[in-house]
Length: 196
Image (tube, rainbow, N blue to C red; front, side, top):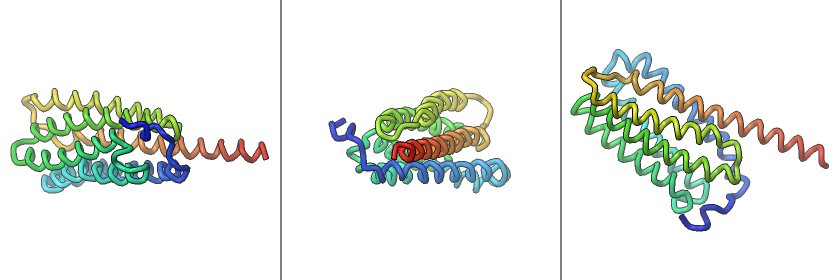
């Protein structure tokens, strides 16, 4: 990592995090709702959802990294984007094999993306604050991924509902981060108003 990656980004970059986290929470919430309803009874929809989830994550990481100084400046997030894009392709291949294979792919991805998210959260804490939820989410993602990999070797055939709680926790953490940043900004503005 170069020294520029540790430098603070412009204030407008910080303002981007709130709508970004809210949009990620909303997407994950809709994904989970669809997985538990239509996805359970329609295999084609379940397959599409399993492809869309890592593809969306890759796109979201790309846009977010670009808003925060570019891909070179945000190395962990760049790796997360690449891992998510590769996962979307791997899921497409695994769908032709078995749902156990799909779960194994999701498990490896959850471990990698969790570690990259944790690293991104630690970096952002320096200039944005309120990243503890993202750090906790990254750690939990890595643990969930290890559990998915173990489950992938079980005799039982998993369904999309095994992955859905993982996405639900993602929605919760993104929403929590957005709300926490909103409250932190309100406190800063109030403190600044008192000083003037």
